[in-house]
Image (cartoon, rainbow, N blue to C red; front, side, top):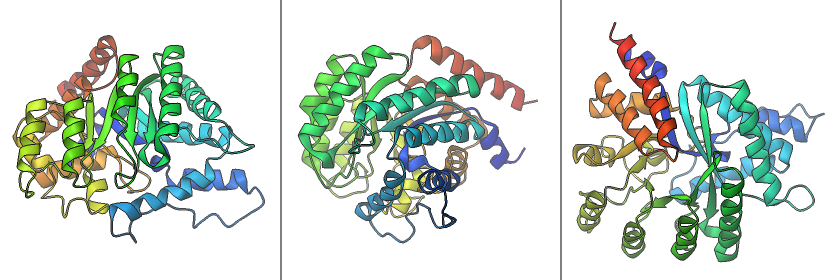
Length: 342
């Protein structure tokens, strides 16, 4: 079995996937047709970062997805398709994250969340091989009031659907807005797990504040790097914290937050034995899959099949799910590992 086929066959765990960034070209075309049933001009509806040269510009591509997910029906379809595609890539556990959106006259934030949950419930029957959870996001750029409102919604739906809504995600453009740590504390006290995008740009004070807050997981941490000037103390602080980091190779390279795959912080965190998980971030935007991310890690950092299986099994430990569900996931990966040796 080639390493490409091995990575595709491996039962995988995805901990960092944004719903709207995960929409495939096929789904975007489908959503466009839902909005414009008589139009034939949907071939150019794509999301891509190829023409952008910075992290800030990469955020612009989400305008495409947002313009097409303005009704509960569109949100349901988006969620359903994303789950289907992850299952087709042999992902057995998926945490989707999304910021609730209200569209005047078309959709409330509550309807947005409920459309996602409805898709989860339907997919549980249609795609029984994948387990799916929701992290409700707060977008830095939208300000304190929106963040507070989204956290209240997260707490409400966590209480109503505890097997579905499991955590809160701090995301959005790191060059705008605040980390809202006092609000994150409120969510944590309510029982929600916390995943926080951290150090996507150089901001030593905020990075220290986030590390001291100790979220359950961190996203990216591209500017916490032993070879970056002034970042060695932050790197030591991260290593001592033992907070798992969600790493997205293709995303970071295409957003220009790291110069190349070989210089990615994966290398240093992996060699230090720090908890890490390979993720896609936005599979639609970056034209990737979790299988491709595992294949990239293998070829770039000389990881063998045993190392890839171990990475996947460790990712289960960092998932925002129950111990019973973790045992089920580990069992599936162990069965694959045993079978692949024969």
